[in-house]
Image 1 (cartoon, helix red, strand yellow):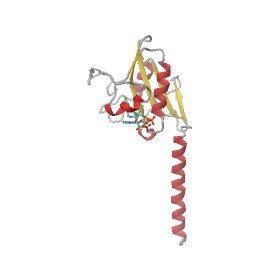
Image 2: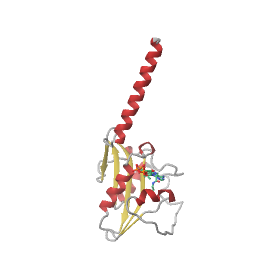
Image 3: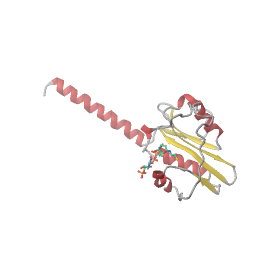
Length: 166
Ligand SMILES: CC(C)(COP(=O)(O)OP(=O)(O)OC[C@H]1O[C@@H](n2cnc3c(N)ncnc32)[C@H](O)[C@@H]1OP(=O)(O)O)[C@@H](O)C(=O)NCCC(=O)NCCS
């Protein structure tokens, strides 16, 4: 085999080994830390959330939403100190809680991070009678894994709400 061709092959193999190594590491979830205490979480750590939203809240507003929530958890990739997933709940603190937001950054989806965030939040809310989540129809199976059942809801959305684009 010509040397140039051989070198190309070695380079391609190394690239593919490195790719596998990164993926396996992420699959192990080794670098993900789940945090309830947001005191060391900064807005600079948020990137890539509210995928598909026409007017997503800014990183500062995103952090404020979590800080103002009854409970919130973030998943942080310790290697790059970036928030890669979050969940929040609003509540009366006694009977009722609502989980308005759950999202995992696209490149980190399918690794169990979303499920871990839901489990952490349900454990945190374990004494609540009502824990409600509204979601798109295709997510019914995802949430059913945690013991939810399907019901009816009536929704109101104020599309000109103040936080949009702030
Ligand atoms: C929903 C979401 C948080 C799941 O996070 P994740 O880290 O990818 O989830 P996990 O890896 O723990 O679980 C993946 C499982 O959920 C299923 N799932 C994830 N997103 C799904 C979707 N949009 N539709 C149907 N199933 C979905 C996967 O098929 C997988 O199922 P399996 O365990 O049987 O293989 C993530 O896909 C996301 O951020 N989506 C966009 C925002 C969103 O829809 N949030 C929910 C608002 S209520």
